[in-house]
Image: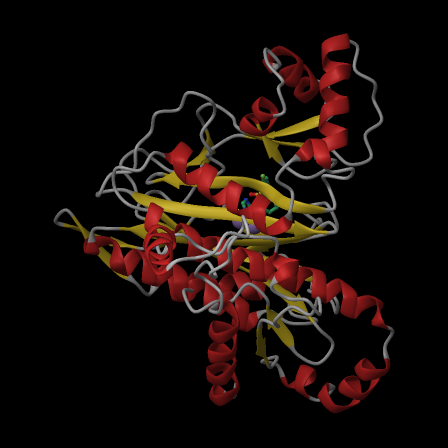
Length: 416
Ligand code: HZT
Ligand code: MN
Ligand code: MN
């Protein structure tokens, strides 16, 4: 691994993610801007972020590249020169595809930058989810669904995961949820942006109490290890083994008790296919014997979960996340279910959605119909995933692209 390449690229990414965070001075009404009104405007707007369609900030439609990393294995390094030559001659189709993923990643970085101030004790999970999703809608232009002929062209990739403490994944507030973030909580922030069906899936963990620092570090380093080990022809079990070793090398003291950090062994990363958050391959976070290999051109979400609990999650609590199953052509029997399925097909296709997204489309009293679609196998439910009560779980996740010569950590930012 060449450290210098990594260093300089981190800087490149951070520079690319930084400009235009503040509102520019623009006079929307065309009125003369006096010094007094300018001052007022500047003060009022100084806290606000420059959240507008991303295309306005990148007029040439070329989005910043992620962090480039060399492949670790010798057999990958040997192909570098040959493949690099071939790569430059390849058709522009795959470049367009990578550019779409980079666009989603740039939006992901800007969304997470814009909500940092909101992630404080006292904030409700509903307010946090709305801040993330409203920012994503603004950057992608997916604000007014009634004005969009195709809401699936770009926008939210999947519901904002805001899972607390022993809940590792797939919690997002449903309507009426009053949960408020507390200073003793460990919050996983997991959200997605999609551009032409290419999904960027990336997550981080927030804690206010420093006693969790080692837990967060263990999981951040475990995810970085997963990214480092990933490559063309690498066995999935070997990635899991490397992740497990790093994760288990950490201890954390919480409320006077010492824990060895454990991976949540039944959670994993995954490849991503167009409009499909799960492309069929799972990247384990423990050695699991799966000899399936990563392949050239694949797009992966590398995510790891660490816990002070038993290291195994189970479904529990009210479900919020759902996704239409691909290639299922069953017609619902209930007419209410038929109508709901049309709404799902029109607005989300096979992208995951949550109950709040149905609420804002004006759907109501749809729960019986939705449960019916799940029972018929037309829609998949993704209930919250929990370790044992009283445990603390953390997560970090990056989206990577396996180019022929190098890999690209497309969601890398200066934050994680
Ligand atoms: C499912 C539903 C969603 C995919 C991983 C994940 C959040 O646990 C094969 C491996 C969003 C994502 C997913 F709404 N899941 N990444 N980020 N959740 S998963 C999975 O179901 S399937 C992992
Ligand atoms: Mn995720
Ligand atoms: Mn994921």
